[in-house]
Image (tube, rainbow, N blue to C red; front, side, top):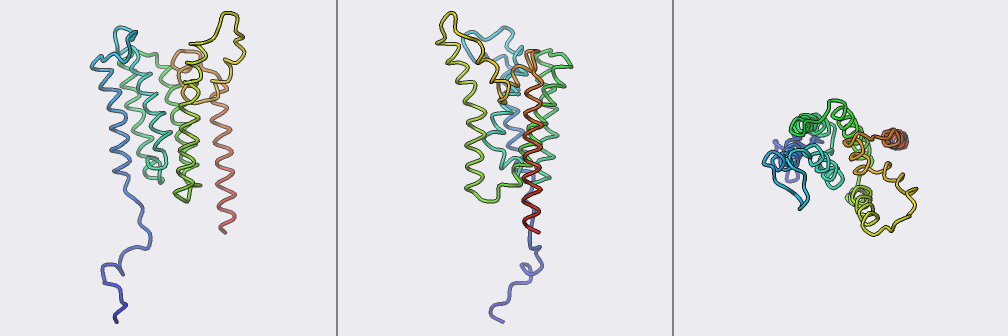
Length: 214
């Protein structure tokens, strides 16, 4: 028959899950860069602390959070990729903590915050069925991740003496400022509560989506 499919296509499965190799390689590269910079004692600013590896854990966690905000639909695109990417995060975080001589409690909190955020994003990815939805989600996560540090910098740079400090509470609800507070030993329960609330909302949206498909 002229419209018959070749045998190799006829035997192929209807749906094939993408390999986690590509997300793993990208994620390893993302983590290898800050780890190398810290190990090589490369100063990233004019007033960088000495020794430079003192901030290795900060560099690693910032790199991981920024990469997640920009690439999470690719890095966490399916269950196998999410598991591989999540499990390979902790060894790099531990190595950076070892370079920075960070306390074990700080490593546990930083690892818990990172894994919690990755779980939330993994659930969110399952709701993004179109390219447009993924692009919009990346825009939102990028703004939520990158804008608060910029606002904090502008506030610190241009505030005047006597300015009220009441606005300093809101950074606890955003990934980068909350993560930096964890590393500085001033972690707020509000940061982990936000992750829990985001996970519950994402899971609820996922259940509603599955129910509508039935």
